[in-house]
Length: 288
Image (cartoon, rainbow, N blue to C red):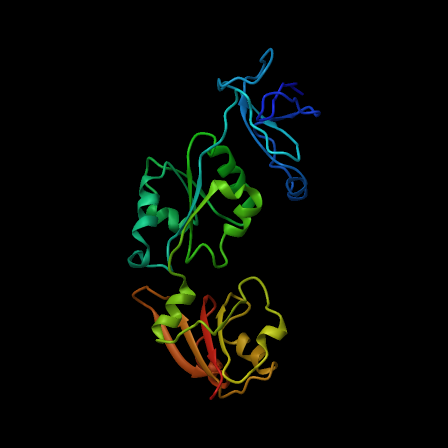
């Protein structure tokens, strides 16, 4: 443990608790810990005699100050770098916004899926793939923020089922900057020239919506994300058990924005007559 004198913003009052020194490679704090405390970091010398120094040591420690109040490190390094969450659209580069593309091209540090990194990352950009180990990506972002902004690429729009939820839990909101984009759901409704302001948007991707949301109602429109288990064959069965007629119109939207895009119009009862689509958008409309 390294004792430090850290003053509040006024510079007059010292905190009544001692900060805890954690090695740089230590695991990130647990989720419950971060919910209970304010997490603030600064880089200090390994063996300073007193106070907080602005010099970055060769073997630094991360000092975690646990407090219920916002404090300013009197002579420390305040992390002002940003996490830029850039939506990269439904797939084709034609649908990425100029603002997102500029952020990606100018980034020194990129985070994204392996597919996104293979397409966008340049040789001089430091990168980290998003895999099933989300904590690894979070720790990478936290480490890189010390020196640079970090651009996180997410498919579709960041506000719709993306890593934004995780980043909001792990970092303060003033560190986050979001660049919106077109989601696959948005493009699916556009392909049908169908307004979606009254649609019920649901996700079967790694989850199952509540039956209450799936129940049939006159004039109801469903827009649904799918996955390997909940796909174009299994979801119609679930809807049938929730009161939907087999004659209800089903549109399967697959590979949206790519050259091999597929738009198939059928009905719930005839869904299994077509090949199974595992990662697509399903739009279901009740008969008027």
